[in-house]
Image (cartoon, rainbow, N blue to C red; front, side):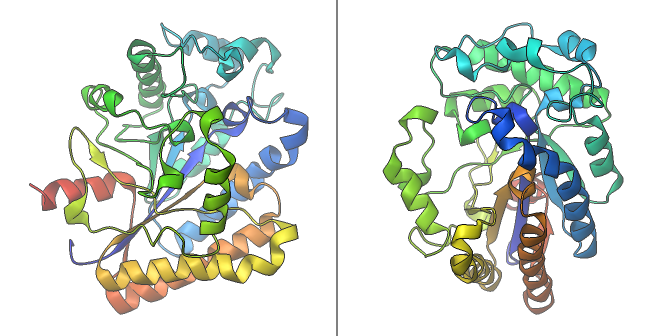
Length: 328
């Protein structure tokens, strides 16, 4: 396997828990509601093209109602200096269950994901926890992770993979992940624009470079061989590319965005390396047809590369199993 390439696809499933501190609900409603149409279409595509995907789910989404949510909260909560980061300050504003509040509950969607073959359920922490922000610490992170694992286990899911919210990977927390049975995480791309940082210290230059890198090869392909993956204290499966959503005003650049991803995929297949693609389901919640068509073209190429080079599709858990075998 180490000589065959692979695509890893991971999705950060968070609904409003992932954007409540960034954009008002009224402004982002269309994207969040559209998730309920986009996810079934993604799942159908994944089944059609035999894609093994990882769904990193915010633990709060599992709850059927507010009572279950309140009973599932971690014993210790982060005391962010910026209180706006905390979802706990906003629990009074949410509805009582999924029927009355489609933005903060998603048990029905999780059940849909379960039905499809080769879909891994992973964690995106319980509360969309920010591991680099001031005011939080290892103790509150561990409590959050424990709450996430508890609610996943209660729904029959064993958590082997973790995606850090906002990609705020904290090296010192990896040992905590290992302690609780997490085997791997999605690390960040190697280039400077992708380095983990606090939300408000991102800087405009980083964001501009990341945007440009989606259309032009500025930071390289960010593919890698299984044999060079870090395994201690847990396996690091770095991202290669964020799948940006369709933007109508940048429609003229769409062929460049597609070519950028296709070239990197082909590079990975020819060299027997990994290409790790990720996005949020809510990125597809608007302009659903355009986003699904774009994903279809990517997966058609994956299918072609499978025939030509034996290119595989692996979940994060499957990839980490192989890494641990190859590097033993």
